[in-house]
Image (cartoon, rainbow, N blue to C red; front, side, top):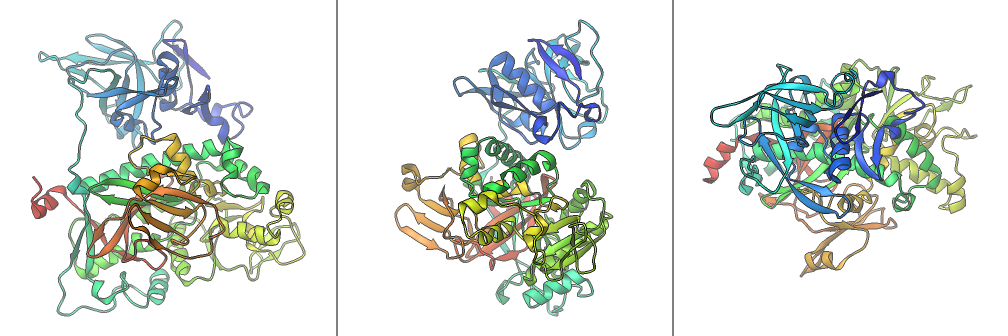
Length: 623
């Protein structure tokens, strides 16, 4: 529904999705707004309008953001025609430079705009008011002849400060951003001391009498964990049982920001790939599945429960290696074991950045569409048993009835063509520990990698034999978490696409489908586009050549080439920070460590704590 027309003849629409005509918006893909092939945002959110207004009136767009409040941190816009970067400055509420028509008014992520913040386009400014156009705040049609949505009270102090009052008393206006060459009175860039990004290794004091048992084996998941790792421990080595690592609050804040921003960028890149068949072909996915992947993306875009980003965090900055958006591991180590470790050892330094994971997963499941019993499907790897049990706890707390199936033995066909579990119950909803690639490997094996058989393969079709994994996961009547579209962001072929789309993003490493001269000059890492647990990776140093490589089952996969950015070293370990998402936002943080340059399935999870900046400054004498 059209609400009004903003200056520049830009239409403003209602985001009341319940009243949307399904003929206009038949699927999720239809909700994505494009102009001249340039992505504007999600119909009809506030960010979409702000970007569309800017594009139509100035020819510029700002970078994609996960949440509206992040626009306040941007420092440039892009002129689409020339691809030229133009400066963007942020002015806090109360600045001596007032807002002006065409600038963007930004709200913080609290109160009325909790988590997301808000953005509007300023249309008129007076000494006692600011008028602006916006989407996604109310669904009222503007009075005839009016070119703005709302007006807020403003006041100019004797010192020349311009203040804008928010009509929502629980919300806060951060300020405004203006494309200008003049930075006077602008918010200074918040530069964090690089030393606060260093990871520090510590040890808890040894207790005179320390109980060997500290996990509650009466709990099924903790008992399974103890059995798999061979005791009450996180680290493998006996000498590491008291070792833990710390990072600063500033470093962790950056991890949280990066997680939200990168999730949004990976989603944008996924959409980009699905709109380009030549790019999609580089992901080595059977063409017979392409329609199902498109269908999954269109209908289940917002149904991802959880994933894991892997980062290198050091004084050189924060860089992402990949996004495990499908079948991520280490949830229990992060969300329960490192907390239990701290309780047992009396480690009260800082805080546990994994303590929120369980609650965030519960919230994600409560917001899901699951409306009948769910089957947790795992293979017979013992590690996946405690992983499945940890997730089962979250599901049940969310009010979802579930049961665990180990392997596919005992599955059968129902009279209506359903797949039945060993108890004869139809399988309708699934959360799996298997990667989607495992199901694809079954398809490839069945078709003997014959291109014609792969092209005509009918996924989920009933056959004479007992149901296999692929028959469950690709069955039309079965809804699987994580959705099939997560094959795209989990595939490392997404990394060159991301770098091409967002070359200025500070979190991305230079990555290419080909080994370029610039990569050779600085050192590179070769990775299979599909691989797990650090398999089939090569690390090439600029001067020393090949310095480390791993074997595995993915040597036949195509490769991508990523600039070499080594993990930081602490206590003799290469340490990697990982963050978990739940429903697309940050949920928890953990750490993995290894003597090897390449982390693998055998790499240790070790306890991680987040400490105040001042505590690290005092220890390290940072000025």
